[in-house]
Amino acid sequence: MNRFSGKTRALWPNLIAAVALLIVFLVGITCLSGGIKELGKGTMDAYFSAGMNPFLGLLVGILATTLVQSSSVTTALVVGLVGSGQMNVSAAIPVIMGANIGTTVTSTIASLAHSNHAGEFRRAFAAATCHDAFNFLSVATLLPAELLSRSIFEKGFLEALSYRLAEWTTGATGAQYKSPFKTMFKTGSKWVKSACEQVGFEDTGLAIAWALCGGVLILVSLGLIVKVMRGPVVVRMERYVNRVLGAGGAIAMMVGVILTVMVQSSSITTSVMVPLAGAGVVTLAQIYPITLGANIGTTVTALLASMAVGGDAAFAARQIALVHLCFNLSGILIWFVPMRTRQVPLGIATWLAEFAEGSKKRTVGLVFSVFYGIPALIFFLTEVF
Amino acid sequence: MWMELFKLFQGGDSLASLSADFRKMLSLVEEMADQVRPNILDQQVSLEEKARIRKMDVQVNKLERQIRKRIIAHVTLTRDDVGYPLLLMSLVKDVERMGDYIKNIAEVGELGGGAIPEGELRTELEEIIACAMEMMKGVGPIMDAQDRERAHDLIQEGKDAGKRCDQLLIELAKSDFNATQTTSMVLLTRFYKRLGAHLLNILTSVVMPLHKLDFYDERVATLSKE
Image (cartoon, rainbow over all chains, first blue to last red; front, side, top):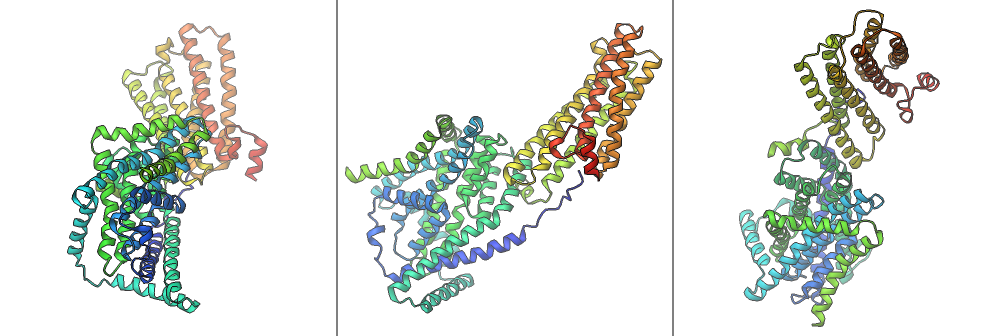
């Protein structure tokens, strides 16, 4: 029994690696934003105009996030696009909401691994879909509210709220302050650009190559952060289950925030919880606040990305990053804080799990129709009528 | 709240802490057995002692559930170090059963058992109890040190004690003990034999491979010893 020393691996080597990768990520954002900016203003108006159907934006967000399995990548790209001036905040808001929905696919897919054991699957699927239910309910309430307030006051409430916050935060730090970090990211971005030039890219080709390199850096760095930090996150999740579980919703939410900020991916935090729920170690009610914490934690990526963006559209980049935060906080205020509404996503998750139990085909059909079918149908209806 | 969150960053190996909690379970059952031993043959276990034993049994059961929950969390999350958690999953069940048997021993009087008179049968039972207690006190240090030699010796002693229990019941059938005395003798012999059997199960974890846990095969044990 004395075979265990009680010593654990130190966290700091992983943290140092994660910080280094975070710098690469921010260089990637600078490259992306710089490359798209060089393409010229208005190049992407056809795709991301202010008048873009918001349901198309929602679909784009869902599809992009399910493709890359990371809302952080999608939101970072959106920040890059907004920061380059190619996409405005109004058009970007539904994409951010779509990214929030898309990120829940990972944990839902993770729950399918339990489909061979009925009871285990029911618990795991409910745990995964409570994240889905929250995000869908938040979009179902906040997107119409945003569109309605936009039509009445010209600015949607999330847009207005994030604008105020962006004003307040840039005012606090000084919008014109020359950050040494920003200089570092710019230098890194220039290196990437000159590497592209040396390969032989010119003019528009150079701008595209520069932006693409930025995209690759974002994808790779976030992927590696997940790889480097997954171990420490798993250890802390185990400690949470052993030492802190049952301490209350606020603490569970903070744990979700901390673990997601560590790993820069809400999918990882929620996916790690799914097998624990399947095994019956944690209950649906215990998982729900962690999931919401993960939703808040993942907004840090976009906020960090906005720090790397400079120039005229830096304020808009900060604003869209804050939209992500405001959207999740508003969703929590509506679907978690009041005890009555809190039961709604939990009830939906339980019902979905009971519906899906016993049939893999039905489950896959459910996942596809919920994630892609419903948004596509709404988009189709809004385009036709 | 910050203290709760700080716990996430406090060190400590989960397997080491599981191991420590298993030792806590063992210490609790040992304490229970120590409490019940002096007065059991005369059926003089007081109500306070019985209450204390029941309370400790509840603690043992709680620890068993906690350890199992943590094992599941560990295996589910890390998906490595599966051997030791599987072993512990089985061992905690043995310790929990030991707790139950000691509680049953303390309650023999409530089942109609009376004081056992002095004589050969009582002496034999005393020796069997002494052997069970020796095994119980030895099992923790043996597991700590993974002392295979001592484990083999104790397993042999335990097996011999089991045979002595069966023989004791045969002798009892020939005796002129009355109903209450026979009830005590039969139940105590049975319960201490079961206690010894669970201790043997735990000791096999030191000398046998995981898939042969609970089964002592001298040939395999000797091979692994070499």
